[in-house]
Picture 1: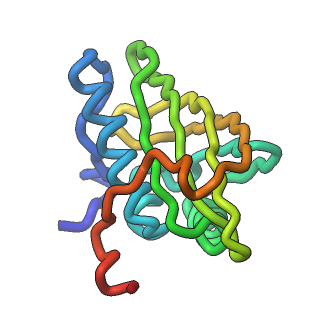
Picture 2: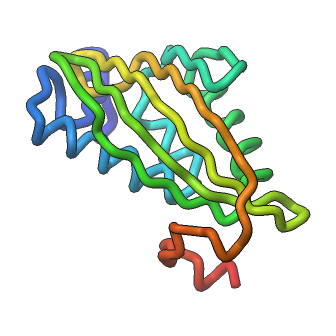
Amino acid sequence: MQPTEEQPETRPPVPPFTEETARQKVKAAQDAWNTRDPERVALAYTKDSKWRNRDEFFEGREAIKEFLRRKWARELDYRLEKNLWCFTQNRIAVRFEYESHDAEGQWWRSHGNELWEFDENGLMRRRDASINDYKIGESERKFRWERQGEEEEA
């Protein structure tokens, strides 16, 4: 069923968050981002969601999808882990870490924090992300699980 004006999009769990529902929201985000599917990931955000990612500022689902396409074109074999840091009524703070490699084969580990704000329907209307990267050797990787669809890519 498609959302209508009378029945808007909803993305449970919805605010106000408890520790359990905040953890569910973080896990759902982690799972979605690990698919590396911009279309799927963008559905968790309001149509006019405002983002800051490092030094980029943009707004809206189409801009989010374009950003994610660029991101995952250069961050290959991306694997992400998110952890709940704290939460309030409609806000969640997350600590995250991910690994990827570039086209030349150099592996990177990235650490960061995200501040999320949700609307009453559980869609994220604001995301602020601060991220630091550093080079690692392939032997230093921590995230080695197989992703869904990885077999088809090989």
